Image (cartoon, rainbow, N blue to C red; front, side):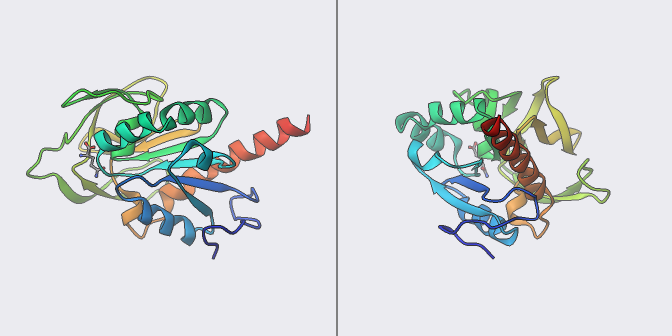
Length: 216
Ligand code: GLN
């Protein structure tokens, strides 16, 4: 096991010294840290642009996207995350984090980081049946994926640049473009490590690319 503040030796994802930042303003960041610890990946809490330095990946957890967005904009983290993505840093947004990554946010409309070409409808599954544990097909494994929804958004439109990795109710629930992915559910709240393992494989791919370009 590897805990915060220590350096990963060699993870089973192939890249040594991968460090994953988790936005820790509000919401479910601790559950992501616990999941990463289970996978022997180092994590650090991110609250400032400086915290992001040296990270190979970043998780934007669930919570309240309006509060999180305001914090990101006030602290200069919105710009820092945009640069991080441009430089090949892997990003994974869950629920409120998926809302932050979308190009268009509705119900109500709000600004966003605009890193994934999709339109999301906040609280899209309705307030009555807002929270549920379901299973749906995924491209990540043969068995269905368990998905925990907590007042999650619906992805109403996924642009052609997005790969749909899992669906629920005929709507994309897990999407990816290159090194950026988003889930409208909470994989950190299940025992299943599949989604975080996939994210770590994207982080590792980016980290080894960065190492290669530093050598040349
Ligand atoms: N309903 C929240 C929002 O719109 C997201 C809920 C969650 O992250 N569990 O920001």
